[in-house]
Length: 123
Length: 123
Image (cartoon, rainbow over all chains, first blue to last red; front, side, top):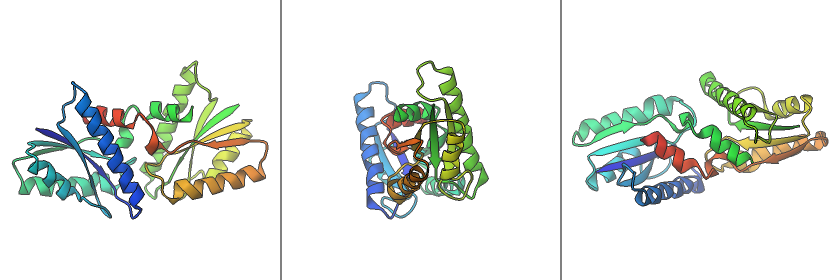
């Protein structure tokens, strides 16, 4: 089994965290309705200020029986959180739970489709 | 003439601001090569910590002869910056420069294409 874990920064503003959860649910519905999806489910986690934490999100995936988790950093730029904090937390989890393979994708800001969705938004 | 102004938060990390500039150049090339584009050019501006500021970015558009600017908030969630700070700055500029019409699009985090580009990134 394979899970996608969307990792956002987390905010003191509950509505911002809720937005990430809604997007995660959207992604989850999308993979369930697609015959081509490589994922069994989608969850989200937060680096700080909101729950679940990244380790808790990863553990939840493991509890569901996945052997591979793809972590997608929901960030627009490659600051310290993306280059260091998230990889560090993931590596620590991997060391304590070697039964699961975890890969981190490039962060959202590098997505090749960004210009297209921005132009669509601006129309 | 009509311009698209991508407004990002701005960072102390020069590389993050540079990423926004590269994306802006990408968008600019894309509108130039599209026969369906509604824009004559694309610029970026920053709410804080980087140049140009939003008023400077808007003024640059005005100096180029545009009569309409579409401001696209390059933000993932609707915090105070999106709901208050950017609209306030834009409104102030509009009052001092009534020759230009400025519209603010929904922020990036609301783009309907986000789930698709995230799934593409995770593949």
